[in-house]
Image (cartoon, rainbow, N blue to C red; front, top):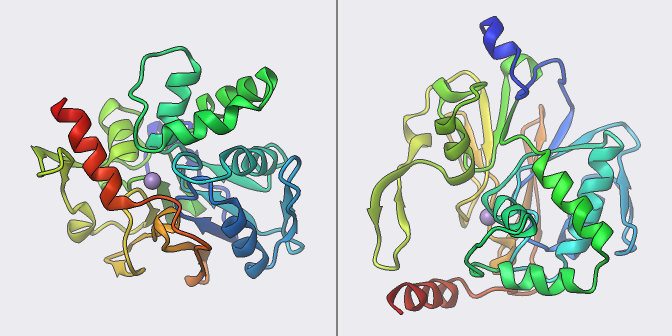
Length: 268
Ligand code: MN
């Protein structure tokens, strides 16, 4: 790795874990608490002041998309923010966190894809809290290189040649993945399957596109198992490479309905 790479804010090579890496939470606080307990964390699940830490000093890596669609976004934010502040967790930015940041910064954004739920839940929160959330998200990196380059985390994954880079292309890839420029029948961008072609030495853990089952593709793993859609919330123990999952307690968001609503909005 060159010196330029080491100088980037993405570089946390000296942090070697052990880590517990968690996929898209999307406001599923109850499932997050259940998963943390299964992972051996000591958890105070008081939604107004949640806390978690691991007695053996393991740390959490959140893969982004803490908010939107789910029922308890403020509680998820509180827990993640507190853990990051105390050095018990690292968190990278997801596209949903980024959109919330733009909204909180006064920018015009489309209130779709579950953002309405987050905004509604934030309505009863103080302005200080909203400011804290804004500061927290704006301080998040879009990817990290950890453990002497052996581990990379990015919300939508990251091709080898973009790892450790600070560029517009790397930023967009981390948040949105790689797209072909085409749209599907619902108006969704058609995504390229970068993981199938991945041949890098670093394990890449990511989320973003919900999958039914966890499966290793080359040295990559997608940990978004669609908890908010009634699937599961998943974690990867690193370096053990053990997978831990909890079932969603409910289907908080109907994926098909969401796509149809978005298609209607586009044709209006
Ligand atoms: Mn997501």
